[in-house]
Image (cartoon, rainbow, N blue to C red; front, top):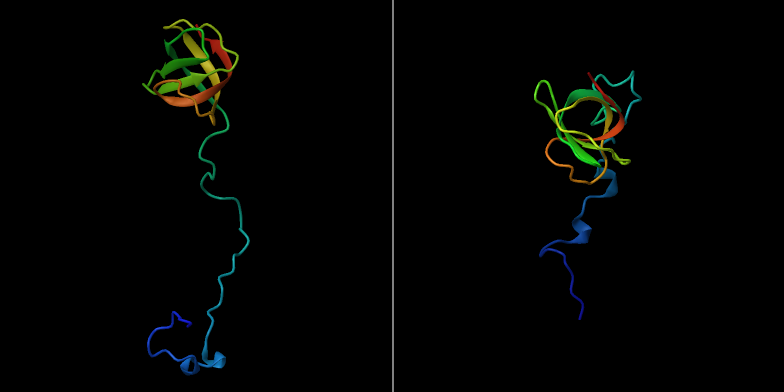
Amino acid sequence: MLSGCAAAGSDPASAPPRSEVTVSALPTLTPPTGPPSEPTDDFKPTEIVVGTVNRGGDGPCYGLVTDDGVQYALYEAKGRTLTRGIRIEVDATPSRLRIDCGTGTLVEVKALTPVN
């Protein structure tokens, strides 16, 4: 015995003929007229950050707080010894690594320079 899923009282012969079925026009994408007015990336490619080391050590993770109180978690693959309390300038990029370097916005160090 065969069974179907058709609703009771539905008759294929009572379906509207194809000529009566309408298809709405599909949306068409138009080419852009210029560059986007807002940034399309979630992060800046590079950023200069100046502040005071508040989590030092031998690395590869450090902490830095800027003069306006923004906390960064720094990651530097090569590692170095940073003393807590020194001022540094960091050329950083947002990190794509899944690593916990502590509190703050995680960034990767591209260059690091002590500031007097």
